[in-house]
Amino acid sequence: MKSFRYLFPCFLLITISIFLSGCDTVTLHALGSNPIPVMHEPRTEKTDSSEMVLSANLNGSILTTGINIKEYSSIGGHLDVTYRLGNLFSPLFFNGTVFGSYGKLKLTCDDSDCNENFRSLTEEEKSYSTASIQERIRVGVELMPFFLTIGASAGLHFYQDFLQYEDLRKKLKETNYVNGNYSYDVYPEIRVWLGSRLGSKGKYGTINFEGSYQLYADSYDNILSVSLGYFHPSGWHGGVIIHNSMILTAGKSFKF
Image (cartoon, rainbow, N blue to C red; front, side):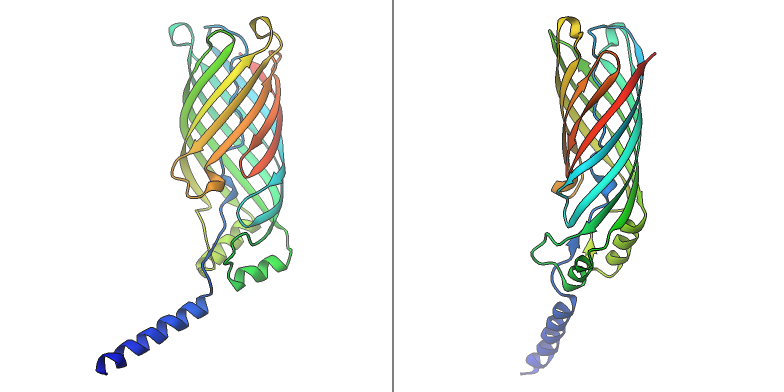
């Protein structure tokens, strides 16, 4: 009976704490932690000469399937610089990218066990602004057997998120209603792609399919990305990128 006197208060305390805390915490990710929405730009001509390529692009999201967010729309753009070595080392390249975006979103409850504190926020149907600055550096190898383009790269993806959505995430994480990653961080990434040149020596351009994988990301909605792009020898290009958003992108490249 003595042991019961000690165990019963402990059991009661645990039960009350669970009741007060509600169900499991809800996941909200920083949107900049998604794979950077920038397509790899393959060589459009089979050559072993060195070159520097500067690319400017605009993009916008048209569909969202992220965890606990809905009606996300954004517009953004990026500058991308690639240096390709020549001669014996022509398959090797170095790449750097700076990307920025601004958007709006609403909260929803995808988790079946959303706590009441978070659920009340979703009922407000309020739009939150969000913005992200992302950078990426990588090194890769690209081969051009026959009419194909095959390549892989490894690099680091940095991001910094801010505005209303991030302010709300920080506030909710302090109350333990929400968990999620940081507003700024860095993830290693791996990319692979397979393309096909169209026409003799690719005079009609190149179609390229690409997939990316972020290491150490902690949820399905910020790990994988796929894209399909078209690149014309004149430098004009466009495509679609899919991760937890569907993003349309278009731009122009300049070779030096």
